[in-house]
Figure 1 (cartoon, one colour):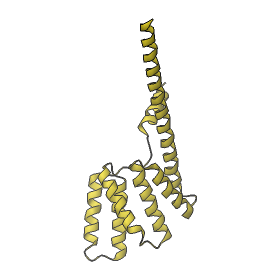
Figure 2 (cartoon, rainbow, N blue to C red):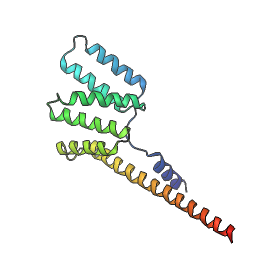
Figure 3 (cartoon, rainbow, N blue to C red):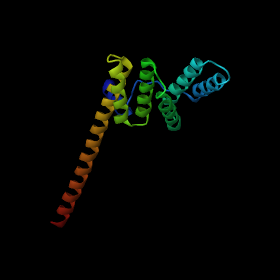
Amino acid sequence: MNQFFESVNSFFSGGDQLPWCSRDIIAGCEKEVAEAANGASDEAKGESIMRLSWALVHSRQPEDVNRGIAMLEASIVSTNSPLQKREKIYLLAVGYYRNSDFSRSRMLLEQCLEIAPDWRQALTLKKAIEDRVTKDGVIGIGISATAVGLIAGGFAAALMRRH
């Protein structure tokens, strides 16, 4: 019985396995980016910006996620390395997933999987999106069925009162 309640709770909570990032970590990454701007190599600057982007798209705050998406979109055009491009596309997919833009997230994951077809992180996020879309569909059907049932019950009650 306990397992049943845990599975129902997991279903409704949408328990994805993506990590969350705290404001403290984001603040530390922002400090690192500011320090890297003062004379660090381009590689060090890029790495610190990548860490900040990662932290932002894993935040619980929508404004942080949106800022991370904007940073990644601005930097992806100048990315030459396929590995870095894959990482940035994946982080964009995480950001869009966090914003509940599942179709855009799925499209970006397909791009990741073209670069690395067996990349476990991308496959796991793709599965989480499919599960979430399925769950949302089931909930929508349940709400619709309940509404139809209530309306039909209301009509039946009204007809019973007339007779």
